[in-house]
Image (cartoon, rainbow, N blue to C red; front, side, top):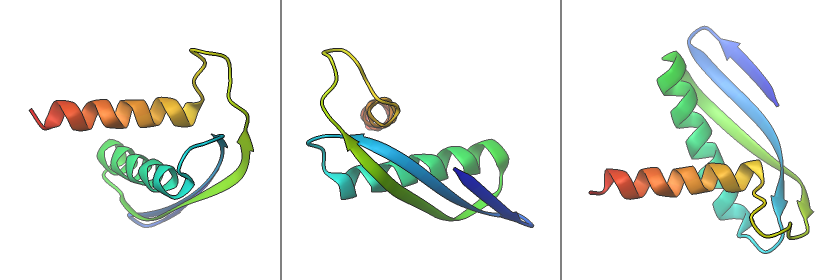
Length: 85
């Protein structure tokens, strides 16, 4: 991961390994959205760009084992569901 700060603006470059069988474009967009939201709310800085670089695909893990990406997505879906009530 690399972060560039210029005044009150931030650019973030992430590298991820995703699980086999997921929709890469959709997951990369959701990761970027979550990172943007979290950084802007935690710091007050404006995130100009989040680049998600997919470095590889991992085979399916053991049942119950979640990757960081899967944890972020699960949290994202739960927070969307909670906010729609």
